[in-house]
Length: 219
Image 1: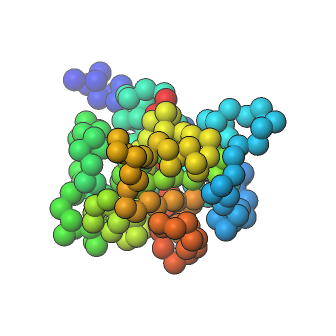
Image 2 (image 1 turned 90 degrees about the vertical axis):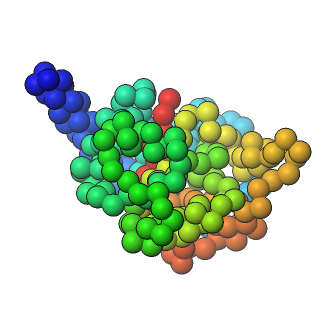
Image 3 (image 1 turned 30 degrees about the vertical axis):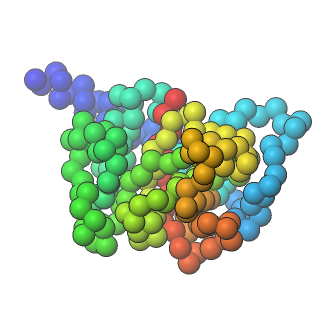
């Protein structure tokens, strides 16, 4: 048992160091990018040699988001455990069963009763798409819980897999279409801390959205 605990503590220590180093890199590369520059009709520049993953990572960091890349499920569990300790995420709200399973595996307590949402500063969700040429996160808010979480949570933590990355806004819309070709009633675009666009893509900067935005991206 001691060996297992020592291994877990070592993995957490490595994960914590990795997270701190990645966030230092984010801070060094952050600029004054404005969400008002979002081009919802634009496509990825044709002559760009950047792959979509690198493009999204760069743009997302420039927008002030904090990206934590995970190569395996186990690394994601170690990283989220380390992040909770590093950033003091003591009160977490999560309604998604998939994320709930990750948190339970990592032995992290969380709340999922909507009545707790107003008093919990950290909210965790999945997303529908990641737009490479803007570094933005797209979420369809079809439930009351989703709408309240993204508007209320001081820290928004998003989980996604690398296949969610698409070139541009048009590709994201195509990805979100239902079998009958309909789109979700409400689409939320998050470009960074306190920078959110809802529905018709009119930017709301500072008036809505989390103060901190983290993305755990699984390869």
